[in-house]
Length: 302
View 1 (spheres, rainbow, N blue to C red):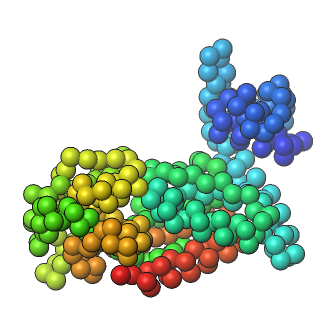
View 2: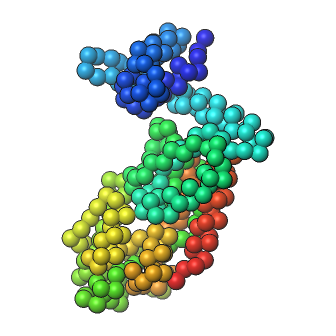
View 3: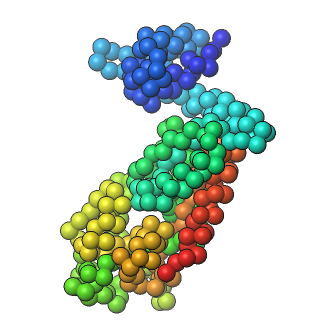
């Protein structure tokens, strides 16, 4: 018979990369973690890991079994949350991924308020500008900008009308002038960020005459979009980012818009999960909460 705690330890070991780290995270002895996986292997009659004296990696059978093990744990958590929802409370883990700028500057205080309203929730937050693999990583959902490349994922809109905005600090514009056309961006210092594995340096605009794309350049690039926003505030160049990410900077005068908002590229914000079975009461309520916060913020646009 398969024990649920053995399945949990197997998944934790995969995510942690070793028995010792998984045991540390679960506050158990390393020997117990190893024994649990061996017991699961015996129950399944397969080898889940290929072990050597220096490394450990999933076997082919382990790769095949992993998504089912994750689904089993998700189903267990959903059952617990359904019971809690029947009692009028949200509980259990809530595991999210979010982009750096939105995550640090907007999402963090919003999640504080959400968790204070639902204190039985346990929050796990991953901040990164690399797209999380929702099929393999232990996440309930991710917050993402833009259209989804993987149509198999489920995307719930948070700010469908959000757009990018081209902006710079007043000090930069005073030194270098304000560009009046897309073509003039080629002679400006454009601050770029890395999304996934690519530098975001092809800036698209929706102009009265049609869509235009310009390849920009500059002396700074970072894999953290929040760093790029800070460079722009410091007067180091032009930045082309989601309005949500810079709306407070625009309102405070730290940044100034260069082109009209309707000329800038759409940047819809979504709450994304791997499949609809993951739409727990907690995620549904979180989506409603975040959508209301985004709507309220965009309604105050300067």
